[in-house]
View 1 (cartoon, rainbow, N blue to C red):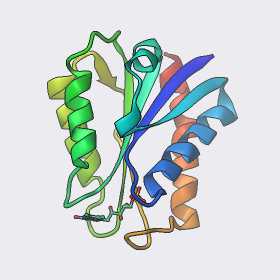
View 2: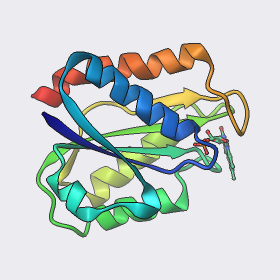
View 3: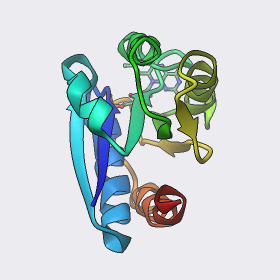
View 4: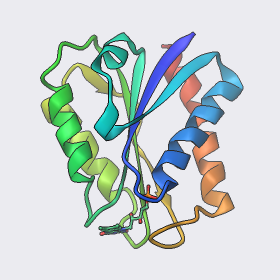
Length: 153
Ligand SMILES: Cc1cc2nc3c(=O)[nH]c(=O)nc-3n(C[C@H](O)[C@H](O)[C@H](O)COP(=O)(O)O)c2cc1C
């Protein structure tokens, strides 16, 4: 059973929902035990025991939230096994993939133990508070389904 910890920041719940939909997609294809973990309440023992880590942030001013950036820096300071990492973001404007790209760059620079196994998922919400349109939600689920294979490797 694959153990995944999903670390997320989410003011209005949209980014959390993206994480849950991705996990639902993975669960469609393989046995998975997932824990949703708010960025300010992460448990490092869970992270050390995980087989994969997912990190999601809303786009705030073109980048990840301060808490997410701080968390990635902290992951770089603990002794982790080399495991996969997957990132995702939510945004409203023309900032497609802007935040995930920055998160990936920070991970590569600061947390070499975590291996970015796929380009991050960037999901457009309808307004600052959401909601997430149906077609974007189905992208999350599909993304999860497609992740099952690289996660097994
Ligand atoms: C302080 C703040 C700054 C934001 N800046 C941007 C931005 O620069 N570009 C963008 O596309 N969306 C921006 N947004 C919209 C957020 O990305 C959107 O509200 C977010 O996806 C909601 O996610 P959540 O429900 O998980 O908090 C901003 C939202 C907030 C609250």
